[in-house]
Amino acid sequence: MTTQHQHLVYGHATAHDCLAFADACTATEEAAEIRALAAAHTWGEARQIRVTHLWNPAGPEYHEPEDGYGDDQPFDITEVGAVADGNWPPMVTKRAFTVLPQDLQDRYGKRQVTVHDGDYLEIPLECEAELIAELRQRGYEVTRDDELINLLDGVNLDSLTA
Image (cartoon, rainbow, N blue to C red; front, side, top):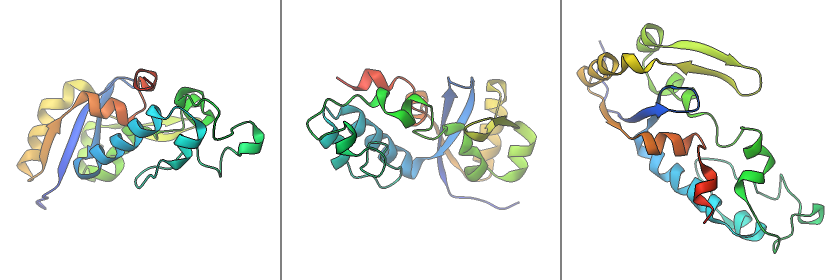
């Protein structure tokens, strides 16, 4: 059995009512990008947000100023097409495919197919203790943070638009 030295963050993803996992090394940076975009007051401010881990759904490649998205126009993250359609940020429950070992994906999860957003791994909440114990036994550092997981999933973005 291969021993890993990876730090994962996980939690209850409320949108799918299951466990979700993310790379803890980038999760807080991604969350900061989401918060920054949500806090923008104008389209110009939103366009200026530099993202490293995600794509900017308010970027000029998606919303041209001449199409009514001028720099001085009010910005509301929840009204951006990609956000309203559920395409941004990407489903956090997809990440288990890349951060969890294949044998644990097979044992604890079930691949679910969505019409618009692709597949995700549904890991039932009742598997938490056993799965986390196995990850730790393999050398993973695992931290639970429901708030972070749900922010990465785009839950309650409207509460960040203060």
